[in-house]
Length: 89
Image (cartoon, rainbow, N blue to C red; front, side, top):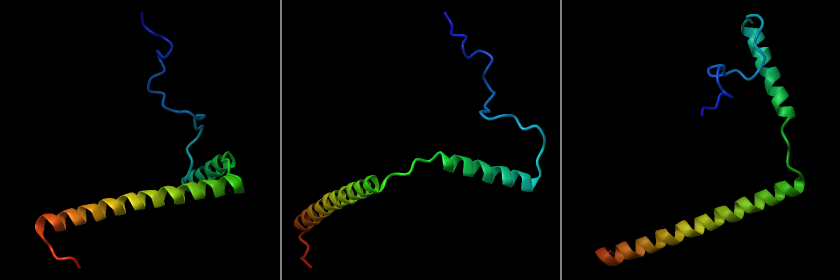
């Protein structure tokens, strides 16, 4: 059994309406800017409370990762100094 639901649709690749005529350079730029503005209208911006929550989460996460890397760095430094008998600075 084969699925024929996508038969004949391969290679279309376009999701928007086909262009009806060739545009000049300035027409293409204007179309591009118009499409950008249309997409920006669809953006959902976070509320002030959401933004504050996201910011706090990111700061806490970065601090935790920094502490983890610091701990590893300190442990490996102590290990290398112990193995090779280096002087402490």
